[in-house]
Length: 470
Image (cartoon, rainbow, N blue to C red; front, side):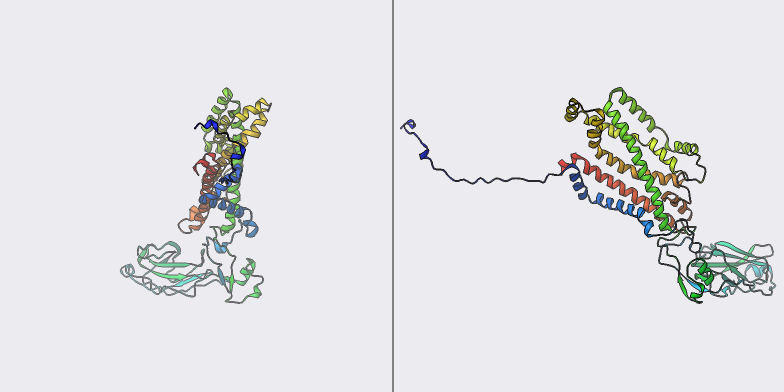
C-alpha cells in the first residue's frame, strides 16, 4: 500500500501536553573589587594580617589619647623597671646620715691574715632603697677592707661583682651603700686588705633584699600622693604604673612605643605613597609613549637603581644641615622618594604596555580620546591591583629601612622615639633588662610580617587569573 494514498489533516493529530523542565544556574553579578574582597576574606592569613594592621593603626592614633603618659618623662625611681603589676613603696622617715661602726684594730701576722675571712658580715638594719647598712667583725692584721656588690650569686665561680667601697681605716668595720639601689636582691662581699692594699684571705658574702621606700615629703614632691599629712609611717602607696616597664632613663615603654609607632608608620606609609605616585606617573608615560622615549626613560630608571641609598642618605643629611645627634627624618624621606620609585615604574610600564594593545584602547583613540584621558580613565585604573600590591610590599620595606637607619644612628635620633632607635637603646641593656629591646623588636617584626602577608593576600585576590583556579 502506498503512503501517497493517505492524506493527513489537522484533525488527525492530537496535541499532547508536555512539561519542559530546565535547570538554570544563577550567580549574583559582582564587580571586580567585590570579587577581590570575597577572595581576600577567604585567605585567613591575609585577613588576620589586615586586622593586625588595623590594630596597629588604632594603637598609633588612639593609643596616646587613652594612655596619657609623656614619653619623655623620666621616672628615676623606676629605672629599667620590667613589665609587671603596679609597684608599691613604704612610707619611712626621711634619710638621716649614718655615722657607721668603729672598732679597735686587731693585730695579726701576714700568715694569719692570708687564711682569714671577715666574720659576722650582717645587716645593721633592714635593707631599703634608701640605704643598705652593713657591718662585720674586725680581721686580725687587716689594713682595711674592700667591698663588692653583685646582682647574681658569686658562688661557685667567685664573681663578686663591682667594687663599691675601698676602706683604708682598719678600725672601720661598716659600710653604707646608697648607690642606685633598686627593690631587688643583692650579694655583698667583703675582702680584708693586707699592708700593700691587696686582697688577703677569703671573702664573706651576705644576701640582701632591698625594699622600696620613700619619705612622705619625697612622695608629695614626686606627685605620688596628694599631701604628706595624708599618709603615716609604714603605709604603702602605689607608684605610677608602667605595664610594659621603663627604659634605662625611667621613661614609660608603652607610651614610647605608641609615639615611636607614629614616627615609624609615618615614614613607612608616607614615603611609599610618594615614590609609588612618582613611579606611576613615570611608568605610565614610558609605557604609553613607547619607542625610543620609553627606552631612554627606562635606562634612566636603571641608573637610579644602581645608586647607593646609604651614600645618598649621608649626602642629604649634610646638604640639609643635619648634624650628629639630630633626627634625619626629612633627608630619609627625600632619599626614599628619589631612589625607590624605579620598581613601581617598571611594573606600571609593563601593565601599560599590555593594556594599550587592548581593543577598547584603540576604539577610544578612534573616537578621539586624548592621551591624558586614556591614561587616567583606562590604563591607571586597570593597573590599580598591581599598584596596591606594590604599595603593600613597599610599606614593610621602608619600615625596616627606617628601623635600620635609626639603629645605626642615621635616622631618628633620641629623645624622639622610633622603634629603630628604641632597639638601639635597648641593645645596651639587653643582658640585664631584655624587655627594652624585645618590645620594639616585636613591633617591628609583627608589622613587617603583617604587611607582607597582606601583600600576598592582595596579590592573590586582585589577580584575575586566580579565578580560574577556584
